[in-house]
Length: 108
Image (cartoon, rainbow, N blue to C red; front, side):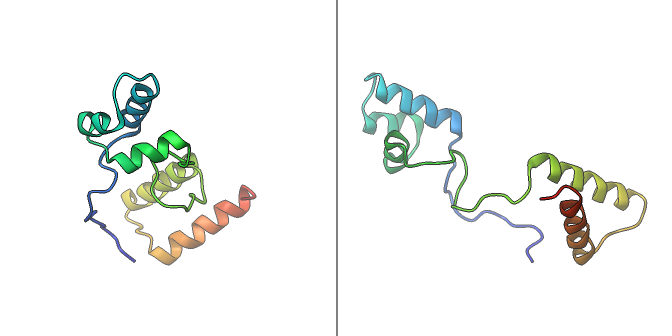
């Protein structure tokens, strides 16, 4: 299990706001697709996919969805950090069992 992953590629260095601006400019015929590529620094295949509506979840890479919500994850992180501050560090297997118990409580 990787503890500190460092991103090695330069995929998706743009943010969702910039792609939205680029798509809006192209749809209102302010600039062309190639001009939007150079202006916003987004590859033209990416802009084209967003224009055609092929992207289901903008701003996320891959096809897999998160199993838990963001609030569930923040609650779990706060619990783990609280336990760490009390000098009771949790192993990865203990964290997995806690996640399972919380998911069972919430009927996920």
